Length: 179
Length: 445
Image (cartoon, rainbow over all chains, first blue to last red; front, side):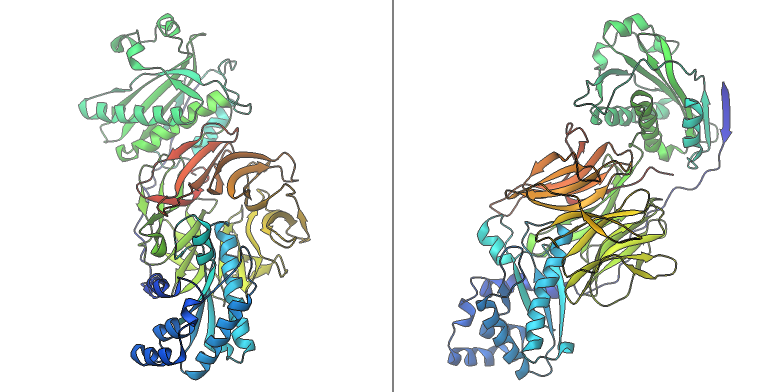
């Protein structure tokens, strides 16, 4: 059997580099450095005395992210695969709510994060739940919903990249960001 | 009949100028590797370096031979006999194989081919696969194309050989899209990357300014749907490979994620988070209408259509922890299918429809496994600290996934791997950077 066929050439596919819209991804990369002061433990940031925080607050700029990190605490931590706010977490969110009320122009973005021990897509959903848990509590404490949004990073932005329990507990967090 | 089937497949290869099939006698399949059984014995094959019509063509012929050999070798189904062992000299092989000399070195199959540059500048490649013991030709083809497409020629030849020997479609003329990772974990740069299944022709489709995750091919392999964090909003996009355009799907409040195309390419199924709760929706790509498939306070995500498009498998923690559920898209009643110990995630329906691949998390480590759509016959194929995100080769016989080993220092990196459905032949897929979230393309049209 002898068959012959002529087909037209279709020009090769030109894969052009994608032009993505520039965006401010740098906003979130700041959390890495923030963790140096806040990541040591949830209690360290809230143990500073009121006097000290007032002094620092002046130096840092009231209503700024630094102010929040140093004087209030920008993050709360979660148990594995949970989005329940612990007693310690509630105390921090309560302080955050008071602080937010003090600065009416401030808008907040609550980042939700997960540790690496879950699948990527599930952890995105889990991070969203965690951020929403913080947002819901802020709203329950009287914050206008329009001032607080959420964003989930799942397991994409760990503060500690090690695969050890200590790192995982630091990474299961929400971080409140002044926008 | 075999000829006609093959031919119909080749008809779709509009890439080529001329495709000529010749001298194919339908003969009894004596040479066969059964790839459904445990660990098949690799078939000893002699691949003679393809002849070239001139010095330049010879270089190209050599490269084509290398790509074919590498495809066959990596499949785990062939054992390539070293050229040093060949007895017949090259000049006489050009005329006709002396089969006793190939039998002597225990070759069961022999591949001989040649490349010729045409006056038009096109390259014409002929090859014949011989059954050494019966001294009969198993298959032969002639392919003609632009020399720039020489890699595709090689992959198509490897696919023809794979199909002739196994009875299954080959998967060498395919591509893989994945996420290329660079930089420290705390501020990882992730870019959409596309390459041939063997790692060649790598291109980056995004510049890394936005975080991108979980790319998946459309059924035509011309579009990719994925998650991108543009303007601080994680949402589902479609990237057109031809035009380089990226289009937002569903401009609604809240995060949309975990996208996949429907088998007919008319819909994208995804999760949408509203007030913190993730449910599953489909979007009609023409009307942009959203249709809700789940309404549950649990996390419902990672949906994947069955090849018929009638069913969807997804993972949900509605029972307390992540498990797999199958739902008919009309009745929308979810039925749990995973019942083993541990959590089950990222289900992906095989293109053949017979199996669902998944990620299983138990005892502090991950595994890639498969089960039947009714949940029976669970089998784990690959393990590792973080071993996640299976994707099927278009023939449903090979899976790709990514793995990151446990790093107490925080410096271990994810890499891509492939493994046969049999659980054998695990191979790392070479990528210049760390890599995750692979998605295998359908067969090229």
